[in-house]
Length: 552
Ligand code: NOJ
Image 1 (tube, rainbow, N blue to C red):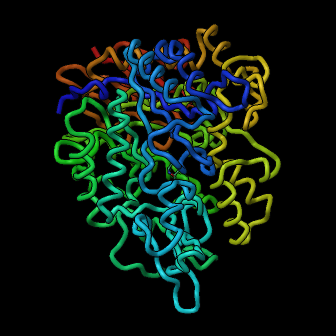
Image 2 (cartoon, protein in one colour):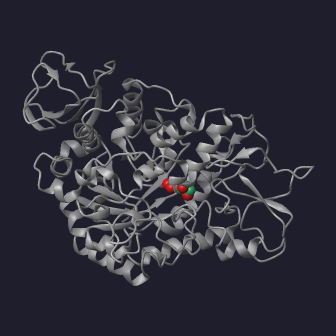
Image 3 (tube, helix red, strand yellow):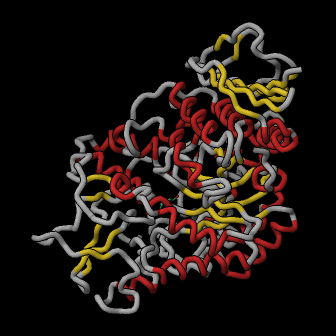
């Protein structure tokens, strides 16, 4: 199917407001800081900006614990600042996309405060409450996604409440129509303000099983991940169709669901004409280093064919209907150059290699702040230096599994979400130009060389490569609609694919290895549209080289 919607032919840029740009010296980024950088984002080629949550929140999970769905966190500014941001973005033909966190609220939300106060109050059934097992222990052996039991005891009710994530993030009870109505009303509030879409958080967890039972333990703590027990429970689509009818229908917006647990085969029920969202974030390609689920201590060496297979499967999944976002980074993942090139090598070339894939696969590319600069991971000396709640949970779990503190810390180094949350690197001044105060997380020390100002001035930078390839993608219909075909599928060094529309054919080839990678004779033909080395390759791709050719 031809792509006809505005959001299919654009690049989405994800902003982590807390780390983007601080205009007050508080050490925390703010909405005015985003408005100040709109020209930078426009120049890059972004058409939509997805903001991770900016609502009032105790910030236990950096805003994914919301205490008021229709307000703005004073740390970030005011509702008027948000309105100004939406208006200024619109002037530049850019849309603001908000994050809806509807599986859970904060435990400081007035709804939860009322719900937990007794067993018979007006909000009593707004969350998931269960009695203890005989003997008083938690109702089931489910482990929350950040570690520890997914249940917390509440003395006022003498009951436990369920939290898929942290204790401070109680799950809302979607079975209750009042809950759904309140959530839909909040989303409509933001539509009335003119937002251009929504990213919908952790949506596969909103439906719980009819019966709550223990599962087979999957780790040394005797628990089983709540994900295994509740993700994508049958009946979830009924809730989501109602969501679509009550909120999304009739608006020229896009919606992208975070859908860990939905397989490619199930896609048609989720996206496309009969689905509920415009797009779904798939997880298979970012989970390649894990054996089973996202347990940081259980990483395995992986071959390129595994990554290629995951990307090709998702391309095939939306070949006829539906549409995927293409991404390598977000605020929940380590920096992609470290993650996908664990053996190291020239980080600039690695960043350009990923950019080339991001911009030439079929789908809407999502760029995470700093990815366009080739920002990299940090490596702090102690677990206490890390802010991220899941890093602490995974560290504890690794210790329980018998790993030493040094080993547990090495898993955090590789995987921590803080890798992606360090301040945006604007320039070479103190704190990377992010703040004049003390940043809430220290800047990566490499900001002296990796920063937007330096890269703007350097024709060969990652930033300028991004600008060029985004332009290429937007102006080349083959990259929008062309049919995807994987090439050299067995090759463990090169990821190559073609995009074909009518008699036009574009070929992307990326060498993931630090050695030369031989190409079959005549493999690259025609005009080189872009490449990460100054000149064209000959018989082999050079280390980490990426090229895009159009055949004549
Ligand atoms: C997914 C979000 O992307 C992540 O940052 C958050 O911690 C969890 N959902 C819980 O809301």
